[in-house]
Length: 203
Image (tube, rainbow, N blue to C red; front, side):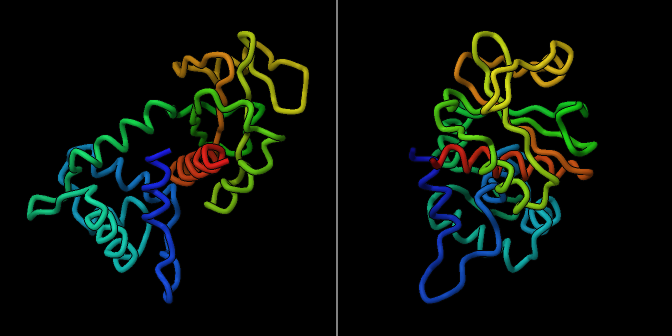
């Protein structure tokens, strides 16, 4: 998948140095922040992504090198290539904040729907681990089939009330996967959910 290839280039180790101190999910969220069209500068990007300014300089330099962004005194903006990358990712991923449920382990919860990815899900452990590494308290992976949500490895559907809370306005179709990142911190819930979704897409 071309967008994932580009994101991987943003985080790849350049010999003989160390790999960048940011993740695929940070890179994605950085592009999303720049793509919001608010003229984001490096200092604001550092605050929003909770990364050091040196790390942000590396990220921005790589984004420019790959032709994803333009930088000016008014802030950064996406190039056509950068917009295409986000658009292609939006075709397979959609997101939503959701309320706390009996399934989640934190007060702040962020859901990412990954289209047509149910065949890639094992037991959801890989997604949970990706979220934990990102600083979230965990991730809950759910598969949507036959009009119902269920946890991988189980035959029992979720109860109607919990399903409605999770689904919100995500509008899944058969074979879609919903990953919920949970934390006591909204940023970490989102970062964890997106890290878990990107992990699933890379399988």
